[in-house]
Length: 97
Image 1: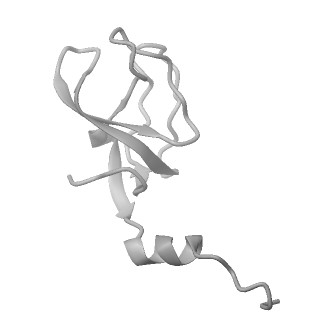
Image 2 (image 1 turned 90 degrees about the vertical axis):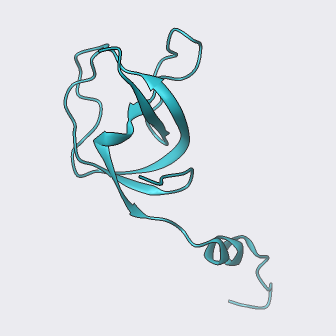
């Protein structure tokens, strides 16, 4: 799955986090990707891609990086187009009301 920072993803697996036993994700909720880590180690020892998401900061893992969510817990729903972002960041004419 090709997911990157700024993409909008939807949670499809909100099972409890292995390190806390708490449900921190909400199935069906939309999150925005903050970063992608290609090789993250899950509590079961398997290694695979992980993501950090805006609005849900997790504690650091053993290597000092923020703990990531398994990419398999999400599906891509929207990738903002580069020209839309440029348009939104462009200065606004002060005469426009």
